[in-house]
Image (cartoon, rainbow, N blue to C red):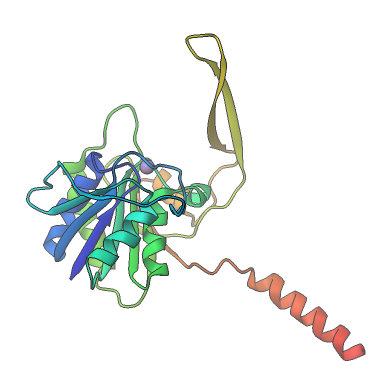
Length: 250
Ligand code: MN
């Protein structure tokens, strides 16, 4: 199995090293990641300038590794173009959760989504980060467990995996929490007294039962199966029905 690994924290992140270490027992692994952090860049692609593909100064214990001056989606497009026959794309392990609404902004998830757009299955993996870096050694068996579960699945699957802060109590299959959040804007001043702004988000309501947010809050590893079709089936069916009735009357 050929496994391409990317992330949005950049090639120097300890999270991508932890993912590469766990993935290598499942097949041939290559790392293609942004040369600088691309967190919250979502599914952006670079089309107004060309991209470079350079050897990484980090060895990843002998794995081939490349850095790209672009987004996670760029890395997947370029990486699968220059390495034919990739079976799966893994993105992460992100230093920070990608739960609920943050899926819309996540560059980590976009790496996995881009894989599915190209006809390859994609798995995004994230973990919350507190005051200290996550204990990736302790997380290792949990990452392996998730990959054992998800990698052999056939088809163009897309999964969003989120680990809890501390040792996982097990895996829970969840749906995305889509409650509203507060798009916080915090003003600060630069050393010259000029006003600048930090943009942040905070959920407005508690996590619902059965969601990704709740599972991680309860200490479980959350796996959310996703699809790319955003169509609201219920509303579309209603509109088509109304249209059909009017048409019938006419
Ligand atoms: Mn990130």
